[in-house]
Length: 185
Image (tube, rainbow, N blue to C red; front, side, top):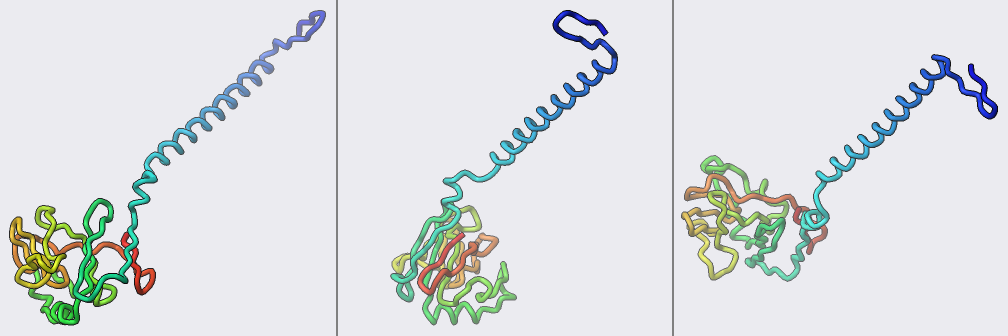
C-alpha cells in the first residue's frame, strides 16, 4: 500500500477485482433495463392504433328500422347489412333443408333474434357488394341477396344457394345492448 500526503490508494489485486465486479454488475443492470425498455416498446408497437380500436365496434340503433326494412352500416371498412326480417322471411329461412346447402348452417345458428339478420355485406366469391338491401333492388331467386357480378344468390338467412360463391355471407360478432340497440364487433 502506498501512502501519499492526502490520499491512500490501494493497489492490491483484491481491490481491483472488487471494482471490476462492481462495474460488470452495474453495466449488466443498465443493459438489462435498456433491453427491457426496448422489449416493452417493441411489444407496445404491436398493439392496434387508437383509430383502429375506435373502429373495432359500431353501435346500431334498431328503433327506426321497420319490419321488412334494411340498413347498411360500416364496420372495419366493410358494409354490414342489418335487416329486420318479416315473419314470412323467417319462416322461409327456417324451413330450408340444411343438408342441401353448399355451406350448411341453420337459420337459428346465424341469428340471435329471429327477426334481425346481421351479416357482412361482402360476397364470398370475389368480394363484391350484393344487392338486396333496398326494396327496389333484385334479391335473387331466394329472396335474400343477389350479387350481379357473377350471379351468386343468397336466401333470407344470407346463405349461398346458387352461383359461384363458396360460403354464406359472414355473420360478424355482435351483441344486443338493449331491445333497440346492437353493438357490432
